Length: 155
Image (cartoon, rainbow, N blue to C red; front, side, top):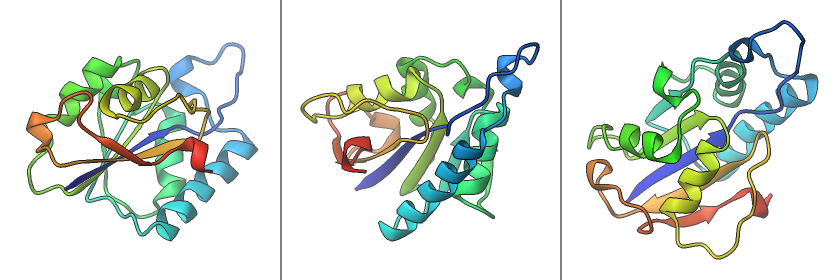
């Protein structure tokens, strides 16, 4: 069984003149990112690999949620559509049992909705995450063949 944790970056600030790529987390975003780490620990989830968009807000979310974790920054996560993210996940090595993806909407939300068989749409606000399980190897990951074990609706 493989576990995928899909995390949307926490709440980011909007500053005129600042490129989208450089937007920092708000104070609330910093708090929420730390809380994500606490919930992941409560659920007993520790990723073997963290893939993260290199945008400032995603980097900081990963840093606060998983202090000390080894993070691989993937340019392809920034502004990615669900199909792009699925292709990235399929490149994950078979030795990875639990994978954490830190990215942006709408891609991360659409990825979770496509992968899973869960009824309804819980939404995916800033700082939300979903835990998805699949029997598929990463290289064979397909839409509709995973099950959501925890979602933003469960918060």
